[in-house]
Amino acid sequence: MERINWKMLIAIPLMTVCVSACGENAVQPNKKNPGTVSASASDPAYQTFSVCEHQAIKGDAKSQYDLAVMFDEGRCVAKSRISATYWFGNAAEKGYADAKSRRESILQALEKSAGAGDASAQYDLGWMYYHGYGLRYDGTKAIDWFEKAARQGNVKAQYLLGEIYSEDRRFEQDTGKAKHWFGHAAEQGEAKAQNKLSTLYYKDKDYAKARYWAEKSAGQGNDEGQVLLGWLYEKGYSVPQDYAKAKELYEKAAIQGNQKGQDRLAVCYRLGRGTPKDLEKAQYWSDKAMLQGDCGVEGGCR
Image (cartoon, rainbow, N blue to C red; front, side):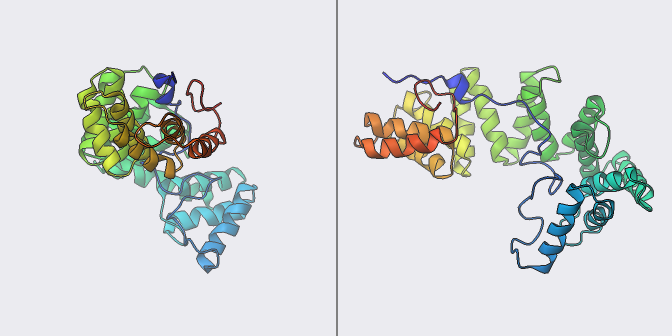
């Protein structure tokens, strides 16, 4: 009988400095972020930003300054106080022109807005302290600003607080707080928060709540939510066991490139669960999953 290690299947990695889906747009110096510049490589704005970013990453002070100006003024790219501060800081370290004063001006305005209760500014400051991006890392200040923003309904702050209390080992883990903040974000329709909340309830064996939030998440096309909901149907947790429904959900996730969905879909075809046995399709989806590495399924992806 095939066995699955669900703890590994739903294991959540430690947070890195990479921005989450609920995070700031266009803030990573080494990655393009969809939607921040024109998707067309032939667009002059895209070319201007791309060339400038490339040179800035290589350490060219003028390009770092010019890139900061783009982020500060919203030229060729989505406006971002975080990225503007970061790149002005890099240029300032090289003694470039008025980079230091422009960086300080942005920070002063940001702190003033945050202090006056602007939730977006509070989130931005929290993000910078949390990631050490534009400001020196300070976990206490990060949490403080995130909570101020979250209490005002900022969904990004709510989601990130949920991740911090459930995943980030630099902080004391608190499932209750994680559920609280994921819950607020989930109620606002954030699909990833719905999936995270579902996962926490699954770990607590509260399958009814796990199913409720998995359905919400999967209904929005979230691939992780589809996998978890598929697993609930496969095992009959809080729902009548339904292999066909499980296979359908795994397939939706697999098509999106979800490794766990691909592996579970392969199992469905191999064992004939919810679909006629098809070893060729089983091998196809198993190979797709294996190409992505170890997905934590015993006897499966490695």
